[in-house]
Amino acid sequence: MKNVIPVKVWLSSVILLCLFGSFACSPTAMAVDIRLEYLMDSDPSQEHANPSERVNPQLKALWLRALSRPEAELQRQAADAFAKAYDYGMHDVGDVADQLQKILEAPETSLVVRYSAARTLIRFDHRDSASLLFKQTATGSLDMAMLIEPALANWKYEPIYDVWMERINNTSARGQRLMLAIQGLGKTAQPLAEPRLVELAMSSAVPASIRLESARALAQISSQGLEDESSQLLDDPSPDSRLDRLVGVSMLVGHSSGEATSKLLELLNDAEPAVVALAADRLLEIAPESIAEKGDFLLAHPDANVRQLGIQALLQQPSPEGVELVGQVLNDRHPDVRNPARHALLSMATEHGLGESVRQIAMDVLAGDTWQGLEQAIVLLVLLDHKVVADRVIELLDHPRPEVFVAAAWGLHRFQVPETVDAIFDKAQRWKAAVGDPNLYFEREVVQGMRVQLAFLIQALTLMDFKDHEQYLREMLPKRTDDFYGTESRAAAMWSLGHLYADNLQPDLERIFIQRYNDTQSDPPEAVYTRQYAAVALGLMKSQRVAELVRSSAGLYDNFSVVMWWIINHVTGEEIPEPEPFVVDIKGWFLEPNEVR
Image (tube, rainbow, N blue to C red; front, side, top):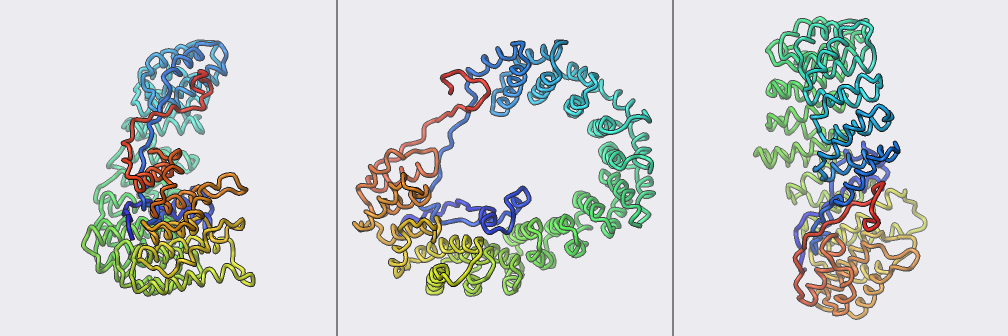
């Protein structure tokens, strides 16, 4: 076959898992980081130029006029717009800062506008406004204090230190204001605050949140000298002392003395997972060799965060024994453990000379029956190009879990072992028979997985120059309202037929592909993805009609349009132009001149 360009364009399995229903599409699900590539998405290459985004220069003067207006809502929206525009590169804001300062100083300015003005000055990192912002903290607004005081701590604004000291020494101080003072003194590492913070941390009469925040601040202030105080809190292992132990270990995480290290090592056996995690995290920094010796214990811990730290510990001191331990958690039920385990093993194999050990443990996992481990082992062994497992991967095409059977198909299309061709085609045929059998029932997520699997199987056959599936592929070309084959599989069929008849135009296929490309007005229309590959197939077959057909869509700034340019070049020899600087104005602001809209 021709023109397979080995450029990696990744298909995130997060998308697949959302389809399969294994994980909700949520921030938690986004931790699942197995990524499976369609090789057809790099043949032809879809690399494109990215246009530059800018804030139209005309907007600044317009918004400054809005800031000078008496209407509070206009002032607020203008201040908020300047803050956002600053993130987009509008950094010439000296005159804007001047106007915002005037707004803060004006006695008639509402609290809402003051808040927006202060927030924008902080976003500008306008440290010359520190004294003016400091005055705003005396207005009594807790929201304003929560906005400004952390910024003053970041800026090391000394006049507020005395305010914070007074607040922590005031026995009637409570709640969020006390918390802000503790956080500020910790961030600025004020040694004079240490005695009072020790009192707050040690006192059972103080709310838990204040005790813990005081301990964290002490860890930022003191790198030694709190071993005795923390020991008083840590020596009681009973469940009732859980808070004391959390406070005690939090005080120690800034220490690196031998005494502190010994105590942190002891705490790895604590019954409270949060205590163990804090201790292990600190030991990774100050005593990696010591914590590596505890790797097996950490990996067996019931808490996922602790198991993840165990992986990090063993990666810092890579060894064959560590490989075996990390390999066991490829089966872990939690994706935030098994995915880092795979990453660690890949690193041990490629960067630390432990390839043989890694391949062996991955093969052991691949011989098992835990779906999590099977998925991880396939990906790991494919990335290590360990093709001797191809027969086992063939078996896993029939695994009941989509995560496994999709990974297996992906692996085979990456391996491209000629001896697997017949088994792959057999599976493709059985797939079609199974999904088309009205007497069989598949859950939606399984059908979605089968469609993705089929796309990989078709590509695998094409990549290995299999030529006996033409009729099979042709049957997938018509669009069906029930999406029987799935968008990716139909696109793969088009791509494959294009390669099967590369430089050998077939008039009947040309008619079909032109029809698919032009199908934009039906209900539902042809998907953009399949339209793209209908055009690619025409380009591969050197259809003279396709060059003019796609010319109006050819460009350099997105996947689809850059592929259209490739088609024109491939068919006519016309040179693909170099991308010119392309600037796009960011739109959607609260106030824009007419020409920007």
